[in-house]
Structure formats: C-alpha cells, structure tokens
Image (cartoon, rainbow, N blue to C red; front, side, top):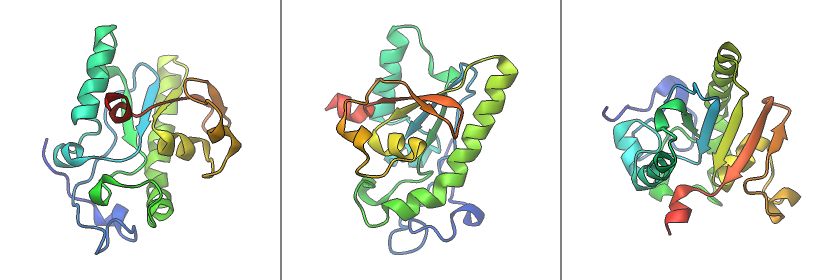
Length: 180
C-alpha cells in the first residue's frame, strides 16, 4: 500500500490538517478483520504508518507482533485503529496545544470502528474487548481527563468495563515504550 492522502471531507477543520501543523499528508484508517473480537487502539500514526497507510507497521509494530507471534497470536485477527488517523507533527501528541482538538476531531472515526467491531463480535459470537496501547489511547477510550484518579494507580492490564462501548478495556504500555 502507499500513502493515502488525508480526505478533506473527513479532515477539514482539524488542527493537524490546516497549516502550519498539517505538514504530514498521510491518512491511516483502521485495518484488520477483528475476527478474534479484539480492537487494538494506539495513539497516532508514525512515519512508517503514514507512508504505508496501515497502523502499527513501524519498528514498534514489528516488535509487538513478533512477540505475539512467539506465543501463537497472529496480527490478522485483530482490528487496529489509532486515536488519530494521521501523524502528528514530530510524532508528538501528549501535552501539545493541539492534543484535545485533534483527538476530538478524530473521535467519530474511532467510534465508527468501535461500532463496526461490536457488530462483528455479535455476528461471530465473540465478546468485544478493546486493548489500548499507551496512556492517550486509554484515556480516550474510557473518556478520562488528564488528572483522573485512575491514572495515578497501576491501571495496566486491569480490566475496566466501558459502559459506553459495552466492552472490557485493557490498558498496556505502547510497544515503543517497552522497546526502550
């Protein structure tokens, strides 16, 4: 696959679409079948993802799926989506002035993927589970603010129930963090 241009009908009005922040041109939609009932949500596309138009294909993605493959879990069964469907400037989103606006602009895209996953799970008789990789993804899926008390606890790998999405949400570290 090659670079997918940002669709104006979706991206217009986003701070990462308009100059000066909108210097990256690639759009990264959700990918994968989701047949195993798991939606993996990450923060945003990186350079490799932007060029390929597929989430989690860079070094961190390769590392993640190589580790899962070692225990017999294949990438193809997951549905994968980012909180942002594009690459933020300098790959930075956390605590940036545009963070909240960019996430809010992409919220309908992730919510649409979640709704599609709910339907896929119903059709396949699977329980829907969301795995968030990184704190931004976890906060977005559970609707947490930056100072939510949950974030001061050890919330990783603990199952949280999302009433909004009717799914268990598991938080884990982003694979890039683990690689470091």
